[in-house]
Image (cartoon, rainbow, N blue to C red; front, side, top):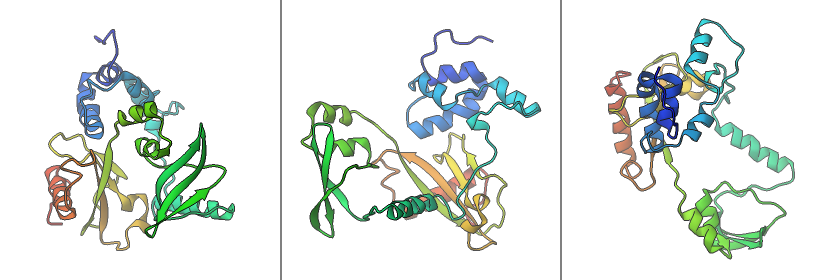
Amino acid sequence: MFPYRQVATFEQWVTNAFGRRLFECFFKTYTEKVWGIPCSELRAEWAAQRIKGLSLGVVMKNLVRRTGTRVTTLIDRFHYPRLGPGMMWEAAWQRVIDGGGEVRLDAEVIRIHRSGKHIDGLVVREGGRERSITAERFVSSMPLPELLGKLDPPPPSVLAAAGALKYRDFLTVCLILDVADLFPDNWLYVHEPGVRVARIQNFKNWSQAMVADATKSSLGLEYFCNRGDALWCMEDAELIALAGRELEAIGLVPATR
């Protein structure tokens, strides 16, 4: 009833679209877990792009009847690989091979040679030895600061800009539980501020083939962090214990299961 007249932040944009109560219950905590900064510091443009076409009015209309409005956030059907998302990368690998290309694993990129805006070739390290690779085109999947840091010669202004970029890291703790059927959803978004887990995947509900033993369930607890922080540096045993405690804290399953 009393919207912000000047909208500059994620908090203001979402509050205008859904109201203060829904912002605090459904958007605030999860978003801050993902990005690691307050919603009052996230720009409104990000919300407008990520939640495009979605508003309280659209949600209410879709609860009453299907309006035909296609909003990404409201999609209720998904295509999911039978054995998980890794099948997509295996398929991409096979298409490269079928097209006459080559996929080299365990090959660390050391330097990227360029002439102006053209990439001439790479130097990679395989088995402790360096070798050069040339090709007409290259596709990078490295984080942008890492990619630009390997350019030879490195443009100083671009390196400075790359050094100012920030991004969040992500890890999944996978737990196998002695429960055949935990809950009917594919995933849960965790808005509880008292735990660090942000989302929980129920792999068995995505595909029965993801869990070999039908008497068990497999959950993937997703955590967002910064490389080198306390969460990132936890040992596997500590992460497993943390995930177990948090499942119990939100009332999903006792840690002993």
